[in-house]
Length: 353
Image (cartoon, rainbow, N blue to C red):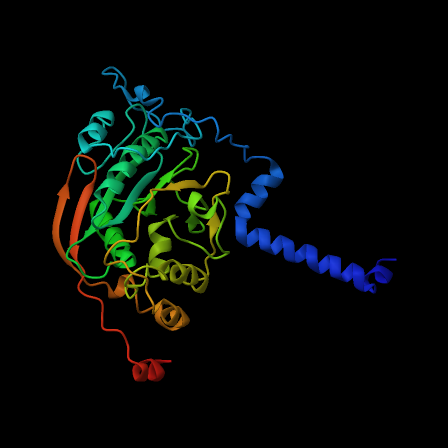
C-alpha cells in the first residue's frame, strides 16, 4: 500500500513540500523555538499588557543581617515579562544612576541576597550615540538586575572620525572584558536595541552561539532572513575564540553579521535562536550615522570568508588603547583602531578573486 502511494506524483509532491516547510521553520525560527512550541514551554506573551522596567527592584534593598549562602535560582522569581518601552526624552545619567543605586563603578552588579549563578559581560560598540546609550542603560540595568545576574557593561568607543568598524570594536570589547574578570557569557549588543521582555535571559547556550534579537520592530517582529545574526547575540568565550571572533576588515555598515554567521558554520557550530515571541526588541529611531556609510565591498568580502576567517579576527587584532575608565554605569574603553584601507581598484579586485 505504502509503495503504491509513493509511486503517485501527488503524494511525493506533498511529502517534499512538508519537508521543505519544516526546514524553513527550522532556519527562520530556530530549533529551540520549534521544540518549545511543540512541548508547550513557550508562553503566549501579551504585549498589550506591559510592566515598568523598574518593577521589583525593591527586592534588592540590602538586609544587614542577611548572609549570602546560596546561589540564585536558575530563573529569577521576580521577572515580570513584557516591558513598557518608550522613546521620549533621553534619561539623564544622574537619573539612571539614582534608579540603579546598587550598580558599582564600571557598571558592575551582583545580587545582594544570593550568589549570581551566571557571569555576563555586555559589550556595546559606540561612537557619538550618547542619547541612545543612555536610553539603553536606563532599560538594561534593571532588566539584568531582575534576572539576578553577576554582570558588567563595557562600552567600546571608537575615537576619531574614521569609518566606523563595529566588528573590530566588538573584538576589542571581548579582549578587554576578559582582562577584567572571568565571564560565562559575552553579550554583543547594538546600542540602539532595547529588549521588551525580561524573560529573554542574558545568558549563553553553552553548546551553541545564541541569537537573541530574533524579532525586532524594524522587521515587523520577524526574522529578515535565515542566517541573520545581527543586533544582539550571546556567545561563550570559548565559542568566540573558536570562530576567531569577528572579522576586522568590515568598515562601515553591513556584512560583518553575515560573516560571523558563516564562521559559526565553518567552525562546526550552529546557531540557536530565541523564540520570536520572546526575542522582541525595539530600535531607537535614528538616521544613518556620518562615518558609518554602507559598506559597498561587503559582498566581495563575504565571498572569501571561507579563506579568511582563520587569519582575520581575534588573532590579527591591532588597536591603540587610549583610555579605560570606570564610570558610574559602565566601563568606558576608548580606542584608536586606525583608518579604513583604500578601496581596491578594479585590477586588484580581479587579481584577488
